[in-house]
Length: 362
Ligand SMILES: *Cc1c(COP(=O)(O)O)cnc(C)c1O
Picture 1 (cartoon, protein in one colour):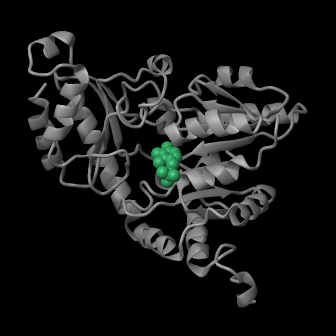
Picture 2 (cartoon, helix red, strand yellow):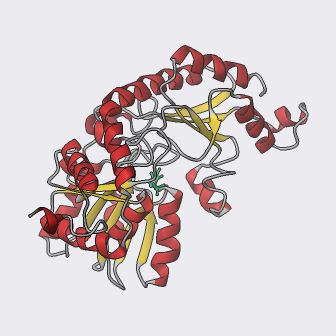
């Protein structure tokens, strides 16, 4: 009956149910759940764990996820190993008797590394058939989105995404979502959702749901613009290296082609700035040059978000990864010359002209 289903808004409300059903449909999944932010969804998923459980997490995951697993998990006696997930045998080697969850991101943020989801899912299921306890494989699908990648069909237990990014797409809502085909996980997560209380407002659900009307159009525009920009930057003498899974020079290109319908709208690149560039300029450090470049851009706003209709630029070493220790940054390959571009849906000629003029400051 109507009043039983919608008894209290934190348990369920009509707008949220509509969004949750749409999220499930997008990935041809059975169950969908929406949260107040991506991190609220992370909190709920994390509470599937118990003290002394072990978690394996991709070492180049989203900064918030890294902090969560490094800081909060440790306080709750949950042990986490950060592993390079592009190496499936390193994942297999890290599995312990107490391993209860594997959390991976593909493409990863900001390096756009690709994880072979199907291979890792098979490997996990193989452990399970040989007597290992169930391992929940979570894929953070924020970058590829439900439009380009369906992690459940590749064997994941939970497909997770920050709806604040591409799905909402306009940079004006915070929300998170997850989908699963597992009835037990779904009922447990539903219980955690209403008990932990990180639920989105009905109005935010309405906005995200309305945004889905143009989701396909936007994703195709993000993707074609991003690929054109990746190719443009790859030829530019002021760019040292471009990271985008759509380029055939990308180490994960073949896997990405197999597991995604297309590649998303984020392009990272290393600017070609040497110490002599700095010496012969008015700038004091490499970071000063990178900041100047970002400020010279007219269409790309300096911001940490991504997946908006308008283009954004982010400098990981100064912004999202500022608090990560220097040694870990070095292992990952994040230095001051790295910038992450979230390519919007503006006319491609305008975006390329803007990048061209800003690169002259280097
Ligand atoms: C932004 C983001 C999150 C967290 O989502 P919020 O909605 O900001 O809480 C998680 N994973 C990735 C890859 C993200 O980009």
